[in-house]
Image 1 (cartoon, rainbow, N blue to C red):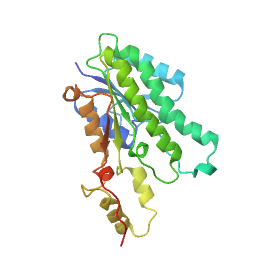
Image 2 (tube, rainbow, N blue to C red; image 1 turned 120 degrees about the horizontal axis):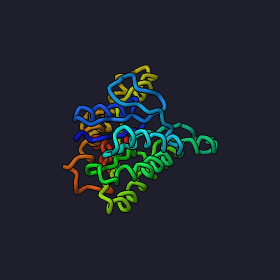
Image 3 (spheres, helix red, strand yellow; image 1 turned 60 degrees about the vertical axis):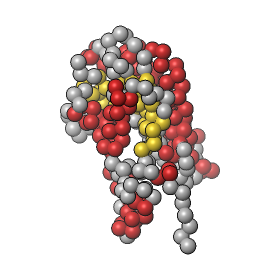
Image 4 (tube, rainbow, N blue to C red; image 1 turned 180 degrees about the horizontal axis):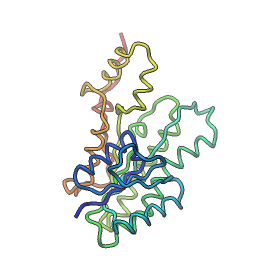
Length: 247
């Protein structure tokens, strides 16, 4: 029987790559996002993951339509660039609501569907970030939120393990999405910028959304059946490379 998969924030970038990869393996994919994807191959349900009523309606739809949930991918997230001393409480709360509260609500309300005796080897994959392990300037709330996602992953694995649910996280590095392309496009010497960023990665290239999607597929599969409570870094070796001065 085809697995049923929810991907939050699945309408674009990494989320859409994850949705497409599961669908290519025969899964029935539900994209939970604020905006619909441009592609129509997946079921779409408009969802604000930080709103508990929205999440409950999503799970009710999945229950009525499919009667089960096998994989939950908590991918939805936002990032803002604001110096800590200039950040408003509203900005802090918005990032924390989507990046952390959203993961909590989705996980909490997915539980009944993953433990109804119908789901097949249920698994949860959370998308954290290497910014939960290190820091980038003006990303204090984003880094804090992703650190929280990693910690929440450990606790979910502990509490849900006895119910047959595995939970892991993926910490992406620099992934070449349209968002990052727009950021890099502001620099006049693009070739130099590309060279500098690639030099951060021992593999010699930027990451692709498919790199994260492939890892999500693996973590949700039987091949990862003895892996839970882990944060898998997918960053092309960036975190293993110590910086050197330009002498």
